[in-house]
Image (cartoon, rainbow, N blue to C red; front, side, top):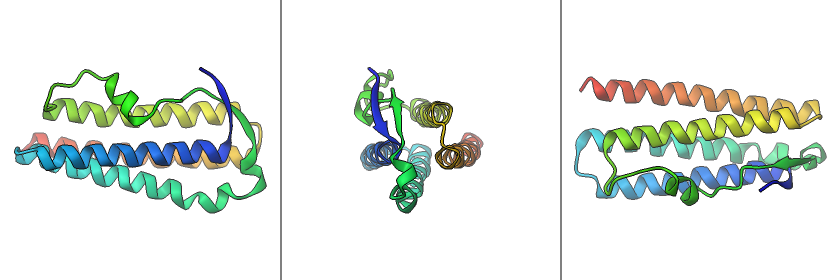
Length: 152
């Protein structure tokens, strides 16, 4: 379903999604008994908290009039809906958790790219390009951390 939202609302939705994913990872961490899985979940939890903080830091930018730009918005999934769309065992395996993290990162990379393509304002485009670059750097950092877990 396509709706119209202002650019700052997209940022707020994304921040909420990251916080919900952080809550899920924290819940899984509390239930996990495997040390490698715990390390992976800690990395992913910190990653989601960092991404939520990054979005929160854009709050000042979002208050500018330019961030009130309207755009067609198609990513309406909540974190819970997103997770339901993944096939996970109970409890999820370390590979499933790793895949979940990659899917979340892909979701946000696609989101920021789609928003970037739909916006005409150069200032707003710059914000979403910056967010995509941050997301991509975080994805690489998380990937390096998870790769080191496989060597353990």
